[in-house]
Image 1: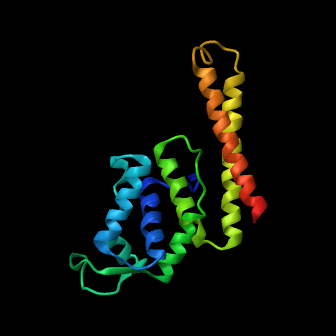
Image 2: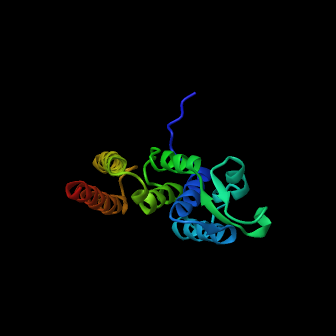
Amino acid sequence: MYRDNSLIPTEALRLAMLGFLAEGPKRYADLAAMVRRFATRVAGPSLDLLAPSLELLRFEGLVAPLDGESMEDNPSLRLTTDGQKALTDLLTASMRPVVNDLNKLVLALKLRFLHLLDREARLGQIEMLEDLFRAERSRLIDLRANEDATIVDGLLPAWLDQEIAQIDSRIAWCQEILAQA
C-alpha cells in the first residue's frame, strides 16, 4: 500500500514531545503542558491533536525517567538514544503542502526543532520546504490562470494573488537560508 511518509497528527505531537526533551530533561507535567500549548497556539484546539501518551514513549524506550517510579510521580524525563533516532526520523519526514492547520503545525515543529539536526539534514529540510512551496505556487498559479468563471470569479483572483505573494516570500526565505549556509 502507498504511504507518502508525511506526518500524521499523533506523529506531529510525538515530534513535539521528543523535540522538547532533546533540549533537556523536563518534568512529565511540564512537558505535557508545553506540547499542548504549542499545538493549540499553532493549530488551534482540535480532537485530531490528542497527544500519544508519554507512558507509551517510555514503554517504547524513547524516553526514560531520571527519577520517580511512575508517571504519577511527575518524574523528570530524558530522551534516550532510540528517542533521538525517532526524533531525527520525524524531523526528516516529508510534508504535505501547508494548506491546513495540521500541516502548519508540522511545519512549525520542524522549524522549531531544525537546529537539532546536523547541517546537511537541516539544509535538506529547507530544500524540501522550498520544493513544497514551489509546488503549491504552481498549483495556485494554474488555478489563477483558469479562465473558467465558475472557478475564478468574484474575489478569488485577488485572494489567489495574495496567497501567491506569500508563497513567493517563503521561497525567497528558503533561498536566503540556503545562500547563507
